[in-house]
Image (cartoon, rainbow, N blue to C red; front, side, top):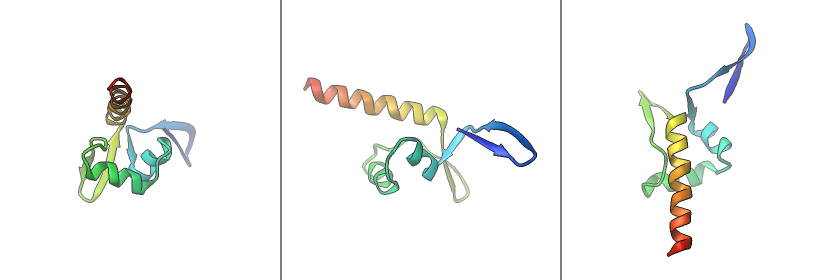
Length: 76
């Protein structure tokens, strides 16, 4: 995910998603995000005060876990 700074037109790489950014990037609604989180299937979160972010590594791990769970369901 990249952002453009007003003083620098080059994209700045981000190290984490906000919850809305994560949902947009993974094409899920925020309500689905919270449903998944509430049953223990959400990504790892980082907290700084009231701010919640999801690292790029946590997002990758979450996608892999969801893929593996889907594969396991098909085999069973």
